[in-house]
Length: 149
Ligand SMILES: Nc1ncnc2c1ncn2[C@@H]1O[C@H](COP(=O)(O)OP(=O)(O)OP(=O)(O)O)[C@@H](O)[C@H]1O
Image 1 (cartoon, protein in one colour):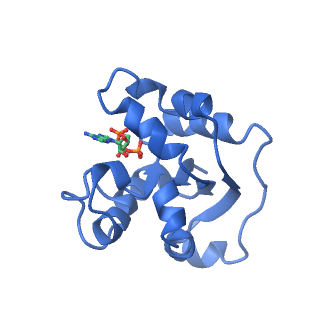
Image 2 (image 1 turned 90 degrees about the horizontal axis):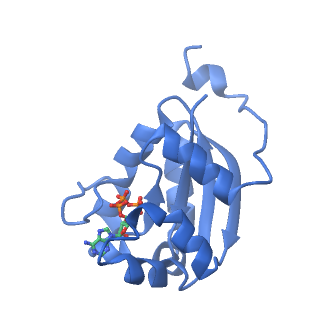
């Protein structure tokens, strides 16, 4: 099944939103396949956001990501990449709808609480970068109550 990379950014950790965010993904019917609390080096943050290196906000974005621990996770489920992005909400909190994570908890684009992979391809790259040790192989006993097949 599809997997995505989700990161609770330093503001989400500092604000005590870890439990709520994990709970949303669990209750939806997605499976947690890997998780760690980690403070990343600048070079690692630059690698994660390499596609944005030419943006004017790149320096501030890297400062933000290295400013404290983040929670890095892999979630699995049918359509989890696209659905995860919907659950997270639009990049700019002023445009993210209430009910989404950013819509409920964020005000500023530079403090938008959470990251989620934007495609299946970038999910694969990000999971390889953040979890070279691999994922847990397990499936919930609830599977038939969540998925038709
Ligand atoms: N104009 C901006 N000013 C400041 N920070 C920004 C701006 N645009 C984006 N960012 C930051 O860079 C991150 C990555 O931007 P991107 O365009 O990839 O959005 P995203 O895919 O919704 O976010 P993420 O990759 O964090 O999930 C944003 O989540 C935000 O924290």
